[in-house]
Length: 382
Image (cartoon, rainbow, N blue to C red):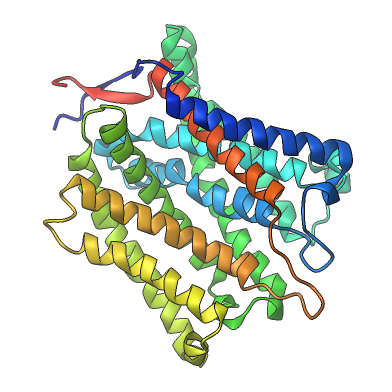
C-alpha cells in the first residue's frame, strides 16, 4: 500500500436513518441537561455526599478522555518515534480526540455544582495548588485548544486557504509537542487521583506506586485501539478503503503495551499479597475477572499472525480492549470506590440518558465532519 495519500471528504447523505436515531438520543440528553440547569443537580443526578461524582464525571473526564487518546497515541508514534508511514491515520485520530476531549470538557461544566463560576479555572489567583483536579482541568482545557489548532489544517485545506496553511505549518511542531505532553500529564494525574482517594478504593484497584503508569498505559493502549476501531468501522460501514496493512503494525505495538500492562498489574497484586481478593466471590472480584478477560482476549487475538492481518479479528480485539480500558476506569473510580457506610450510588435514568446523548452527539459530529471535510485519506489507487 502506498503511503502517498490524498485526504478527501467521504461524501454521501448525512441524514440517514441511523443518524436520525442518534439525534433522538441527543434530544433526550439535551432535555435532561436543560433540566439540570433549571432545577439543579439534584433533579437529575443521584450523587450525594459520599459519591460527589457519578457516571458523568467518570465517563466524560476519566473514560471519555482515554477513548479520545487516538490523536495522542498516533502523535507519539509518528512524531516521537518517526513512523511517518502511519501519517494517513492521524487526521481521523485527531478528530476523535477533539470530539472526545471537547465533550469531556462540556461534561465537566454541567457536572459542576456552581457551573456559573467555571471561569475561575482561568484565574491563577483562585487556584488550589494542592488539588490534583487542578492539573487535570488545566491540561484538559489547554489540550482542547491544542487539538483545535492541530485540526485546523483540515478546514484550511477545504477552504483552499493555502497561505494560512503554510503559516500554521511553521509553528505546528510546537503544538504537536504540547499535544504529547498535556495528555501525559492529564492521564498520569488521573492515576494520582486514585492515590489521593486512598483506602476508599478497593485493594484490587489501589496501587499506590503504579497508578500513574497504569493510567498512561491504558490511555495509550485505548488510543491505538480506537484508531483500529474507527478505521475498521469506516471500511465496513462507510465504504472506505481498508486500512488493514497499517493497522497490523498498530496491533504489534498493542501486544507490547498489553503485555507490560498485565505484568505490572498482576506483579503489583502478587507483591502486595492481594491475589486473594480476586477469589473473594463478591462484586469486585467478578468485575476484576471480567476486566482481565477483556484485556486478555485482544492479546490472544493479536499474538496470532493470521488473525492480526485480517480486518474482523482486529476490530474485535480493538473493541474488547476499549471495553477493558473503560471497565478498568469505571471499576477504579466508581464500582470499586467505597466512601463508607451509609452511602450508595446508582445512576439515574436521566444521568444515563445524558451520557448516551453525549456519545450519540459525538458519533453524529464525527459522521458530519468526515463526510464534508478532508479527514479520511484515499490512497491514489483507490
